[in-house]
Length: 247
Image 1 (cartoon, rainbow, N blue to C red):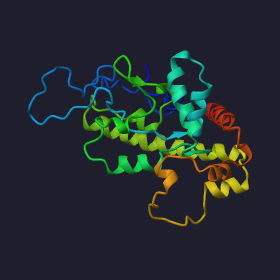
Image 2: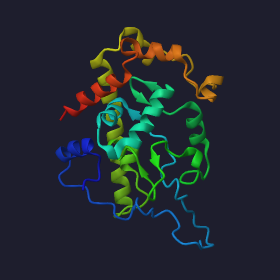
Image 3: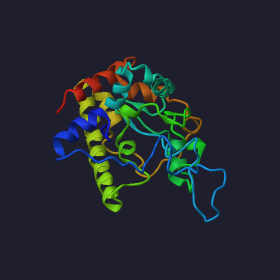
Image 4: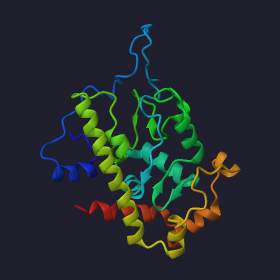
């Protein structure tokens, strides 16, 4: 079985000379970072919460990944698809580029200390806390989730490989999401709002009330979506179609 999602596996098969070896020490089904006995050693060891594991992270889902999830009719993806639909319905950080992190979540995640793997408030909305816990959008996960492992078969060599692949796939995701936006023509005004030439505030802006309460700014949303307003799901599916056809 490939270590990568189907879309990325197809690309890397053309790029890498051999198949990527399995990271068998990173056991997602029985998390290697969780304590599996009632007695935890009093040696300062840190364990993940089995109801969170390494999924205390809200993934940025680029437009073609969102489209892939929406178009995937496998019943096994029903819960994952529903969690993506919930993000779409909320209209918070929902743009033609994809689904981003809300400002409060980003603030918490950036400033959290010793919270990774333990904070349930940071848990991914696509995490399904059943049967030991698993990812609801596994086949369409992003570069960060694809390349993160808690343990590596080849130690530092494996860590360096996966970090390098994450950088590559992240830039591929960013480039393709922007290419999709241009190919599908959201309109000049929407492009100006999506890619401001001179951002007014280059520093991290202060959060307003709507951002804190995670309430969508519908006027800003309308300006971002331009010609595709009201057809967001169709837009995302078209992004997936465009990218799936690429070598």
